[in-house]
Length: 221
Length: 367
Ligand SMILES: Nc1ncnc2c1ncn2[C@@H]1O[C@H](COP(=O)(O)OP(=O)(O)O)[C@@H](O)[C@H]1O
Ligand SMILES: [Mg+2]
Image 1 (spheres, rainbow over the protein chains, first blue to last red):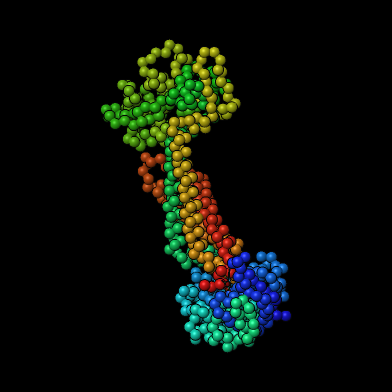
Image 2 (cartoon, rainbow over the protein chains, first blue to last red):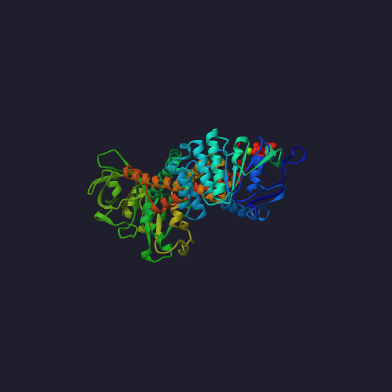
């Protein structure tokens, strides 16, 4: 069973003469242990694709399953819960909370999930080489360090699916490569399904599969 | 609460400012309450000292003791036992030392020396004749002393201070008690009354019997009587209600101000965090948790602000001049505090809608 499975997804915005077809008949799936890149120019529908994949907005038509759960059949509350437990988001600019120190970002996840994640976060911080940064606030970190913390944050409660929206856009190329390699490594070692969308061709070299999105249409490269 | 508290610790200066404003407003609320209670006490304390239950005035007095004129014989028209009613004369005038011209306003009550309205003498003794008076301690504090000869109103005769009672006030001024004949002389001067029963008093004070259980005989040609509860009497003390309404309105207005200040502050903070809230929602954090953390912040601001203001208000009471009417009633301050915290939470509620409306999709789009 695929971790993420999307079938015949269409997404329209607006209606009448302002109608936009953001996504057209998208079929897509990722399995655990797979690192997939979706590449496309700005405005091609990458973010729309990713937010629909993560259950943040619903498609106009089509069906999505995450770990076998059909998102169409979940209530808003169940969807939030599913997102919290199974999906990790990594964004272009860091998704860290500015007033929490690095280690406190993980404490928050602990408090929200009512389980002890101490060991796991320590392990993550060490393996992503950010253990030394644990007492710093996000604004004291470089862009690359922030993205590494974001990745660790997204991995804390062991989600099966990681969705990354242009995670390298705000980084210089050496840091960008480093971040993509970490994602590839996590997919392969920790058996995660990771989808990264990007407009930068150079970032796709570690992917197991590459898709191209253009005007809302997705095809395998 | 974790998020709420961490943010306050991180943005110390901003939250210190809002707590500072909260302290100032709460402080003004406490000061006004202290002042309102002090003034209210000063207006009515002597009446409360009587521990009476009802008061009877002449109907044409419009419930004002100094305008009420009754006869001593009117006591018989009030349907309670002898020990539970007493005739009292009320008169407002000024006192001065013999030989000095500086005057002090006082409230005078005339009553039989055995009457239950006459307070205990803490120093000296009770009056025995119509040349002797007892005064409240707060008049002594103004430079009068035991065994001193004083002049009252326009009277040329001298009265001797023979006793001191606990500090008390009526109409915001110290209180003097003297006997009924002295009262008659003071208020009616040379006017002659052939029968003792015709001599004037201002009111009949009743104890142990609620006003609605008291009946007054209103037949015949006598003055029409008007019975009322002590509370009604107090509410009708000239200026009493108006003063309370004024101060209470100011305090009420400050509650609204607190709601607005806390509301606006947290609303601005919330607007600045919409992207963050979007990201958190995308990560599966419930709107409820975010809303509660805003409410938590308004609670923290309210409690710290009120706490500091409480201390400040108390310290202020220690340095205020004695002449200033100011009374700390813990229950009232507690009530103020609870209302202040409550209205600051209401302020926080204004931001909830904004948090609810934050769309996590926008946070992901990443412009
Ligand atoms: N909420 C929306 N309402 C209307 N049009 C939208 C909305 N979100 C996205 N679009 C449109 O859908 C297309 C794809 O947008 P987006 O997914 O953000 O592209 P990308 O992330 O690749 O830059 C664009 O033409 C954009 O204008
Ligand atoms: Mg985008």
